[in-house]
Image 1 (cartoon, protein in one colour):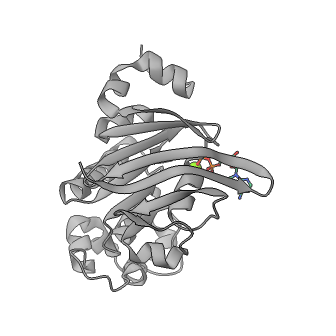
Image 2: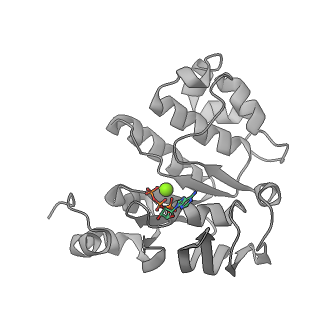
Length: 238
Ligand SMILES: Nc1ncnc2c1ncn2[C@@H]1O[C@H](COP(=O)(O)OP(=O)(O)OP(=O)(O)O)[C@@H](O)[C@H]1O
Ligand SMILES: [Mg+2]
């Protein structure tokens, strides 16, 4: 599989705190890669490094073979790297449709607003409703819709299932699988390891700002002892 994204030994700090320690990972074209780990492991920080939202102390980021280390966020976004942030940040006083329109950035591609609404029909029904009045699940849909409207080649999705009812979580993952089927590569951060591993091709586990596991998702999913050890999970069925 050809490589889309490569992180090479990233080190990053918040102030004097050394947060990321030699984080290396790759995402191949058309892959879903899960990035797992407990609270505070460094998953969101890793995404911020990819997006150009965080300064690196050392290490390199390459996209489609091009060195993009240190690029500002607006240039990274133009490469076609979309972001569905943790906590579904959006413009609460704007309508669903206005939120989608602001996300459209003129990058030509498959995902016009009409196409996004075709894939996520619920957003069509809610087009005139203020984002702040949407339910958690509807906001997650809008957040994904906004990322799609940017016509991403790579989508970074941070904890999409957080706080959602199981049925809505299913919807969200069905959409992510559909994105993958259309050739979008996905780096997926999830607290729910078993769920993410069901959809992912490969997985990395982080702990204390370090990558402590890299391998294929299926064999990790089968190895619940290992998941327990790696992630300290207590709710993994025996
Ligand atoms: N703005 C910040 N200033 C200082 N420290 C921070 C900041 N954001 C995160 N950290 C610290 O960096 C570490 C990694 O945080 P990060 O948000 O990347 O973890 P995470 O794996 O995304 O966790 P979660 O599952 O809770 O979202 C944590 O120890 C956290 O306390
Ligand atoms: Mg996080």
